[in-house]
Image (cartoon, rainbow, N blue to C red; front, side, top):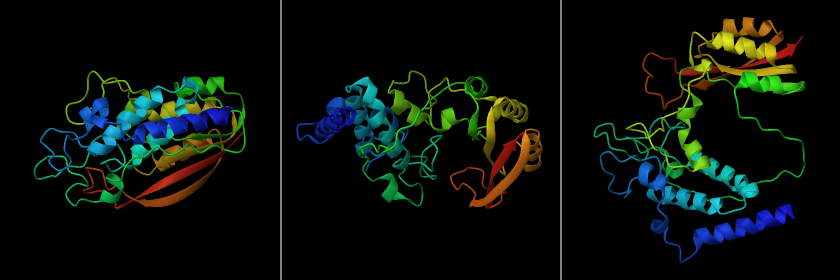
Amino acid sequence: MHRDIVARCELSLQQALVSKDFIPHAHRGFISELYAPKDDSNIRQGERVFYTTRNANFLDIARQCIEGLPENVRHFFIAPLLSQASVHANTSGVFKGFYKNSSTGIGQFGGNNRDALSRIMADITLPFPVFSRFSSDVTVLRQDALEAAGLVPEIDLAYLDPPYNQHPYGSNYFMLNLIADYLRPTKTSRVSGIPHGWQRSAYNRRQDVALELGRLVQKIKAKYLLVSYNSEGYVSFREMGELLASAGSVEVLTTQYNTFRGSRNLRGRSIHVHEYLFLVKTR
């Protein structure tokens, strides 16, 4: 029954999206209005250029169609739509800004060199959700990490992926939150259109992060902890090792990556960064 309902929803949704009678501009939504140009071939000063005109319209229409589905199946379609929205965007990975022509300051797909146009300008679609053949108990919590740690019983492994600098996930990935909630923002930043109200946690403050992470590590009830961090993070490699050693024995796996090329402050930085995985066998 469950899969039958989802399959029927998928068919009706795809039919709505590709119908010959469908006129995108009749359903113009806030993604196309606020975050894409009116004409891809004539982008104007002041227009935000996160998506092509077609893709922004598709996101609006798809999200409006999904809203008409039964509430208990909407997330099956929102999730793959978010995946598509994160890939086919005129950004380098985060949504703090979009590619522009540096000479004119006007948005431009792929930036000065028109890089990655095959990714940026490819059509967004709505893939059918992929379901596992296996079932398992799943609990989803969205709250302060310390509070959540107090609610979860003892588990085998806890994976922690804290922010490592001043940039909070709430602003870096605001677009995905907008698409997920699909509520038109009322107050936004002037350039990128980031909604007001996002929060910076203790992990985004250099003076607070070590203490906050230490409290979390001590509160989690797990046989193993796996913590990912970055060599440019507020907590140094030595500090992180000492902090985690207070909870148990520590092993470290290190992988070298190229420094994120979408960053504005590349001058004076190493061309490589190291990602660390700290595996802790707790006492």
